[in-house]
Amino acid sequence: MSDTFHDSLRTAILDEKRFVEAVFQGARRGAAVPWARITIRPVEVKGSRRLQFTTFDGAQERSRNLTADEARGQLDKLLALPFNSLLARTTAETIRVQFSKKGRPIVHREPRDDRPIPLDLAHDRAKPLILGEEVTAPFLSAIGVATADGRVRADQQRKVRQINEFLRLIDETGEIDRIDAEPLRVVDLGCGSAVLTFATYHYLTAVKGRAVSMTGVDTKAHLMARHAATAAQLGWDGLRFEAARILDYQADAPADVVLALHACDTATDEALAQAVGWRSRLVLSAPCCHHHLQAQLGAALTPEPFRPVMRHGILRERLGDTLTDAFRALILRLMGYRAEVLEFVPIEHTPKNLMIRAVYTGARPMPALVAEYRALKAYWGVTPYLETLLGEALRLDK
Image 1: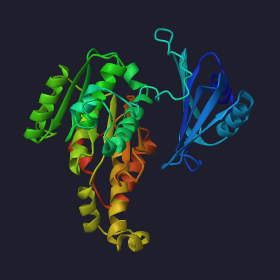
Image 2 (image 1 turned 180 degrees about the vertical axis):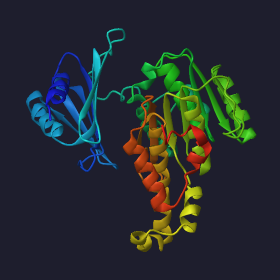
Image 3 (image 1 turned 120 degrees about the horizontal axis):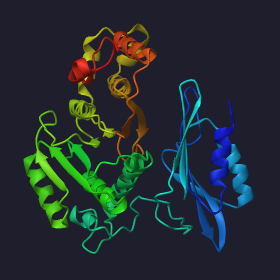
Image 4 (image 1 turned 90 degrees about the horizontal axis):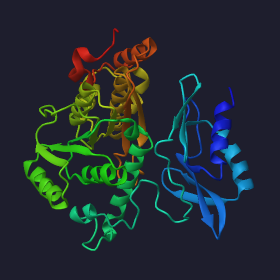
């Protein structure tokens, strides 16, 4: 394998004048890495520049501040590991590296000559583009996460971390900067308490500086009225709420970004079907309960090797959850999306901690991917609800 991408990343990260941040995460197909995510950023410690390496193992973060020589050695070790997604930002460009199924590196370089990123070496600065622990944003007080004077409530610290992680998942795609629509159209389907609806609107407008038209949709009319009053209190004219079923919701124009966070059971599939129909550029879905496929698994003949698994209720449920989300991600790929399933928040916060993140590329599905989908359906004797919703739009024979 060529070392070109290694050299590009190494050069960017070791550039003392321009390096901003790097993120390595995920493992390549058939491989394993010791951490879920590693971030690298420059910091200033007692007047000297260091590179801070922060590892996250799925539960806890640990940071080390290294000198240039120490960082060079540590970086070489990290670049030798089979991470699936590598990103490095400098003040001038963003370098992204991902890998195909066959392990071929795919490198994207995005110049930022028009909007250079400022360089900040403050050791204790908040993570870039993510709300810090001491945020005084008025919306946090308005939704009850912070006190009237802007301090995050003690019992809401975990919620702020969830907000941070969600916004990071949006930001690291870089897709918001590539969507040139004005205003940026966003829909949160099944928005419920709307904490992340408000957080996303704040992030897109106050942090990213975008003009945004955003709608939160849920069946609970009293919640939608309350959220609308909060948005009006904040003076957020671009945020509105509508009481409707997800499948019944009619957008004024196709949404560029679709959120479906903890939408229950088939509501997740309905949200994904809406997003596919709109060809939304960015989709983020945190699925909740998964009853539809569970029922089909219970009625279908269990494949012989899985009988020991399926006789235990909790294991049958977890397998059904996994299959449901695997089908959803696979269908999104068949519909022209680059889809991945990620950890949303550590499992101690919630057992429903997965996020399906998809970016529309318009790529036609490879025959092998279609065969893979058909084989998975036939093996388990099920039909995913998302396939039913998409109908003829699902491109299995094109």
